Image (cartoon, rainbow, N blue to C red):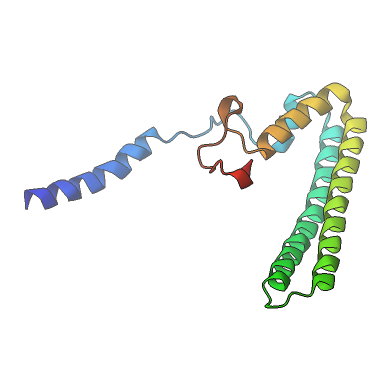
Length: 154
C-alpha cells in the first residue's frame, strides 16, 4: 500500500514540478516575423512587402510540395508492382523533378525580390536566420535533440 501511495504521490508531483520550470516569453518582447523584421531596421512598408512576398511563395511551394509527395507515392506504388512499368515510373520521376526545380526557381526568385527590397546586409541576416531555422539546428548550430541524425536526415 505504501508503494501505491508513493506512485500516486510522484505521479501528481512530477507534472507540478515540470510546470514550475515552464518558461513563457516576456510580455514586452513581441514575437513573430514582422517584429523580427522590424528589429532588423526595416520600415513598415518593407516589412509588408517582405511578408507578402514570403507568404505568396510559401503558399505556392506548399501546393507544389504536396504534388511532389503525391508523385513520390505514385512512384513508390509503381515500383512495388510485380512487374513495374518503367516508362510510367520514369514519366512520374520527370514530373517530380520538374516540380522540384520549379520550387527551387520560385525560392530563388523570391529571395532576389526580397534582397532588392531590404538591401544586401539585411538580406544576408535574414537568409542566415532563415536557413538556420530551416536546417533544424539547435542552439550553437548543433543538431536538434528531437532529430534522429540518420543518413537520410543529414
